[in-house]
Amino acid sequence: MRDTVRGRLYLGAARAFCALLVLALLLAGACLPKPPAAARKGGERAITLYAFSVMKEVMDKSVLPGFAAKWKQEHGEEVKFTASYAGSETITNQIMQGVGADVGIFSIERDVERLAQKGFVTSNWKGTPFGGVVNKTPFVILVRKGNPKGIRDFADLARPGVRLIHPDPDGSGGAQWSILAIYGSELKRAEAESGGADQVRALGLLKGVWRNVFSTPESARAARTQFETGYGDALITYELEGLMMKAAGAPFEIIVPRSTILSEHPAVVIDRNVTSEERPLLDAFMQYLWSDEAQRAFVKHHFRSVTHDEFNQANPDFARIELPFTVGDLFGGWQRAHPEIIEGVWRKQVKQK
Image (cartoon, rainbow, N blue to C red; front, top):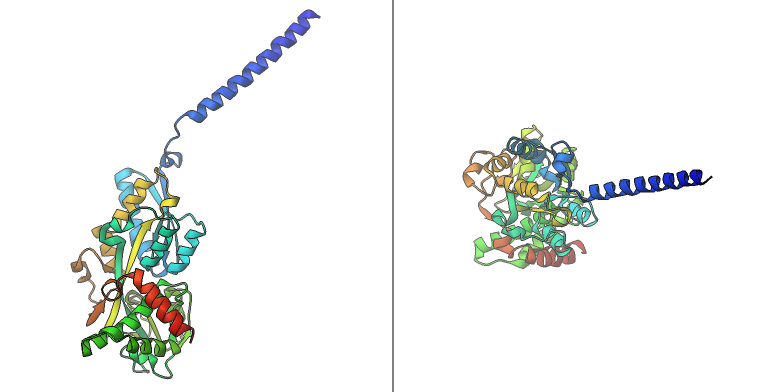
């Protein structure tokens, strides 16, 4: 009887010892350093990109595969991109709602500032090359083939009977650039003719043009799609959209206003979503955006380079603008342009009338 009891005691002790040994091994394993993400995924890395709508072609066809090939050659790792494209304000709202974007490319600087105010962008993004701007493009007018309405400038869009498609400024950065293009063009014209900017005259033009807006799609790309399907007499949009349609043989014409704005597009890392392990890859991708290879790709897809003007000479389709301007030199930057023009002029004096 005693031996039986003793055997049971020994057996219980052995089981307890084995359990403790397994637990110790598990704890020891938990304390071991983990291999880097690339090694755990068999040499594959991942980047999630959110960008405003008209960036889709150049990123998907040239910039993303170009960087992936460069990284593979230099580091022996595959880089897989997940990309999402929509209006600039829309992707900004999505990021603030929690989507896992690693990098964002925006139509307007104000969207980056919104992210910075909420703690999603914490680095000195304006300390990157060219103040964070990766490319630029002027705003132009698209009309039907033969220009049946005789549109030659922004002022002609205010004439009775013109049906204008204009993306929604509440969701589209391109729409806000368009408002600044219309309003600013009249300031520049007045300045050239009389030596001084005329805000009353600029407001009158913006009101006249906006009266003829009959459709406000969610993004610049959605507005282009609607125009391509036959709606409207005219569309204000990025030059690159017009050049892409021209290359596809679409039945329309590009009208270059005498004075128009050059939109500038910033790119940033979404710091809140990025670990220290991921940072070197993302920093390398950001630097790649200003490389000669990427800048030439932008030009090939009808954006204008910010690093070398001679790259832009390679695209003979780029328009010559008599009185170009930027948001910085005419409006004092987006810090003033948004509250004073988008909110103070368009939203309060034009939209609500």
